[in-house]
Amino acid sequence: MIRIRQLTKHVGADRIPVLRNISADIQSGEFISLVGPSGSGKSTLLRCLALKETWDGGSLIINGEDILKQGISGKLKQRQEWAFLEQNPYVNLNRTALKNVLIGRAGQTPVWRMITGMVRSDDYMGAMDTLEQLGLLDKAHDKCEKLSGGERQRVAIARALVHGAKVILADEPVNGLDPAAADRVLDTLRTLCKQERITVISVLPLETAERFASRIWGLQGGEIVFDVQGRRLTFGEKNML
Ligand code: ADP
Ligand code: MG
Image (tube, rainbow, N blue to C red; front, side, top):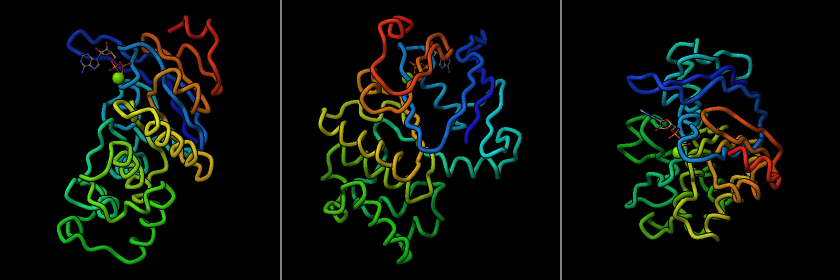
C-alpha cells in the first residue's frame, strides 16, 4: 500500500507551483494512468514519486513507513523497488537481451559484476523465466541492436523485474512505437499487474489509458481533477482536462 499525502512541488526562481496537494492511496496490482494536457504536471509527479525530484511538502508512506523521513538507505531501497522506465530505455546494443537483463544498470548491480559480466546460475534461470514471461525467450541471445523498439522496451521491463522492481513508473513508454508494438508492451504491463501484483503508474495518451489502465488520474494545473476506475471517460471528465 502506497499513500501519497499533500505532495506539493514548486519550480524555478519564481517558485511556480507545479503540483498542488496531491493525495492518493494505491494498492498493489493497480495500473494507474496519468492523463492531462501538456504542462499539467504529469512528468513532475512521476519524477517526484521516483525520488528523482525533491518534494517541497507532503509525505510518501510505503507499507507504513514514511520514506521521505528515512535516511539514504531507506531511499535507496525504495529506488531499487521502484523502477523508472524511460521513453527510450537505455540498453547496451552490443550485448544480448539476456545480458542486458542480467547485468542491470549502474546502481542495480555490484560493480565487479558489471565489469566481468559474471552471473550466478540462479540469476540466469530467473532472467530466462522473466524473458519468457515477456515473450522474449527466442530473442534472449540476440544482440539488442537487432531488436525492435518494442522489444527493447520489454527488455527494459524484464531488467527492472529481475532486479526486484515492485512498482514501475513510466513516462510515455510507448511513444514512437507502432500501434501493435505499443499494445504488446502495454499488454505486458497489464498482465504483470494482474498476475504478479506489480504496480504500474504511467503517463499514457487518453485512448490508450482507457483501454489498458485499471485506474485513470486526470491532471490539470498540478491537481488531480478526477480519479476513476479504468473505463471510457465521460465527456464531462474529458472537458476537465
Ligand atoms: P507534463 O509532463 O504534464 O507535460 P511537466 O510535469 O513536465 O508537465 O511540467 C509541468 C509544468 O512545470 C510545466 O509548466 C513546466 O514548464 C514546468 N516545469 C517543470 N519542471 C520545471 C523546471 N525545472 N523549471 C521550470 N519549470 C518547470
Ligand atoms: Mg511530460
